[in-house]
Length: 182
Image (cartoon, rainbow, N blue to C red):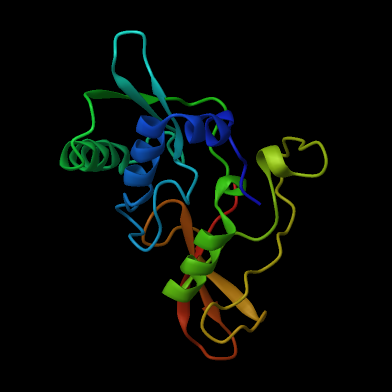
């Protein structure tokens, strides 16, 4: 379900870029440390620049995401610890990040961690044209990550972070975060 970038193929032919990708694959998301920034689709590219730097391209999960400065610091620390060449971080806003970029492995990790992964597709992986709607259509309720019940209810639009909503399972009565699709 994740979107593959051109960088996914290009880095395999360059040992330095492949090493940088491997190092950055281990950088956890500061808000959900069970998944990496690569698995969430935040890490978009690593490339060489004409001036000899490595450029790390990241996309925030939403405009104004407070974790972006921490992610940049974590990237810098990982690159330095791996003795990689000097780098710069490029934050790109277009195309906008979408939950479609979350890998299946990350979705499984989120579920095991107690966070319901986003339901359905939107953005670039949607099978049809997405139309902006000012009155939202009802969305399918997430499945409880603890007991697997589809009988869940939303308690709050926002949970521990702005990208998650707070739900409760009607069957096991346990609350859980739901990673909102967008």
